[in-house]
Image (tube, rainbow, N blue to C red):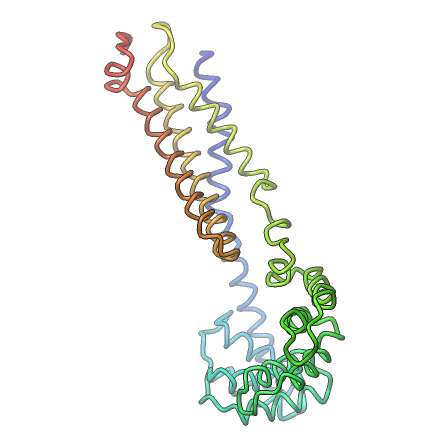
Length: 313
C-alpha cells in the first residue's frame, strides 16, 4: 500500500503536467481560431461599408490566413481599398506587398510610392521601410545618408527595429562617423522593447527568457528524478511492478524535459551563432538519454539479472 502511494502521488503530478503541456497549445489554438473567425466576419461587414480600418484589418487576416483562407492577392485588394482612402497603415502594408512581391508582382517603384504616402503621415513602419530600401538600394541608388534620415524618423517615434538599425549604422560607421557609444544607446532603446537583434548586440539574448525560469520544467525534472530514484533495485520485499511503473514515468518525464530543453537551446544557440555550445547541448542531451536507458536496464528484469545478479525478479 505504501509503495502504491509513493507511485500514485508523483505520478499524478507529472502526468497532469505532461498532459497540460501537450493539450494546452491545442486548446489555445482552437480558441484563437474561433476568435479570429469572429473577427474576420465582423471586419468584413464593416469593410464592405467602406471602413478603412476594417479593410486594412481584413487584409491582415487574409495575408496571415487567420479566420479566413490565406490569400495574399485578396490581402492586396483590401489593403488597396484602405490605402486609396489615405489610411497610412494600409499604405505601408500595400507598399510592403509590392516590395516583397506578395500577392502582386515585385515593384520597388510602387513600394516606394506607397511608403512615401504613408511616411508623409508619420507612419513609422513606412519610414523604416524607406530607410531599408535606401540602405539596400532597392528601386533607388544606395544612399546610407538617406537611410539614416528615415531610420531616425522612425526611431524617434520609438520604433524598435529602426532603433536597432540606427545603432547598427553607428556601430559600423555607415552614413555617419563610427560611434560605438551612440550605437549602444540606440541598441539599449531597442533592447528595452525586447528586440532580439538589439539584445544579441548587447550580449543579453536569452536573459529574459531562460528555460530555467519555467516552473513546469522544474516540476517535471524533480518528479522524474523521484521516479528514477524510486525505481532503483530494492530488497526482496519490494515488488517488481511499482519499480517498472516508476521507471516508465521517470523515463517519459526526462524525455519530455530533454526535448523541451533541446528545442529552447537550439533556438538560442542558433541565434547566438555559438555552434560549439549548440553541439555540446546536443551531446549533453544524448548523455541524458543514455543515463535513462541504463536506469531502465537496471530496473528491467533481464538488466537487473545481468548487471546486479539480483535473484529477486
